[in-house]
Image (tube, rainbow, N blue to C red; front, side):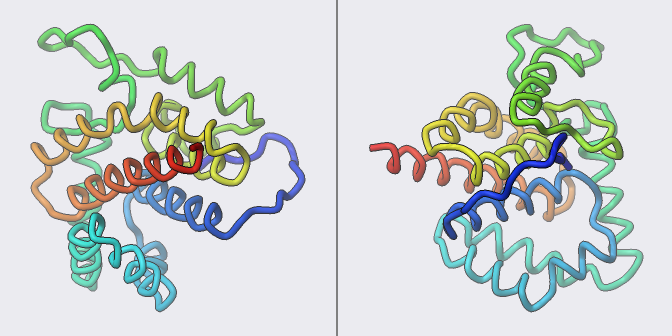
Length: 221
C-alpha cells in the first residue's frame, strides 16, 4: 500500500504497538482492493481465526467481528467471491450517488456539493497526506493509483506511525485525519451497501479507530 522511499533502519517495537500496527494494516488491505482467493485464505487461516477471536473478545468489536467471520465463511465459491467483489466495486470504485467513496476530502470539505458536481479528488487532503508520507520517507505504491487521502492509504500510514512515532503524534494524526470523518463514511456505507461485509468492516474500523484514539489519549496522561 505504502512503502519506504528509502531504506530505514529497523526499530525496536513493543508488542502492543506491533499488534495495533497489524490491525491497521489489515483494515487498510481490506479497503485497498477486493478480496481474492489468496486474501480469503489468509483471512480464514488458523492464525486469522485466533486473531478474529481475540479482537471479538472486546465487547465493542464483537458484533461486527462476528458478521465478518460469518460472511467470510460463505465465500466458499467463485461466485460468492465475485459477488463480494461486485459489492466492493459498486461501493468504492464507482463515483455515483449509490457509492460511498473512501476519500477523506469528500467528507471534510466545507463546500456543500452542488447537484451533479463531481467530487474533487487529488485536492487539499490528498496534498496534505502526500506531505505526511514524504516527511516519513514513504510513498504510495505505484500499483495503487488512488489519491493519497484514500482510507486505505491513511490506515496504512497510521500502521506505520504505530511503530515509528510517539503516542501524542499518533493521537493528533488520528483525530485530525481519520476520526473526524469516519462516522460520516460509516453512515454513507450503511445507506448504500446492500451486503453485510463492508458495512460490518466499516463499523469495525470506526469502532477500532475511536477505541485506539482513546487509548492513546490515556497513554499521554
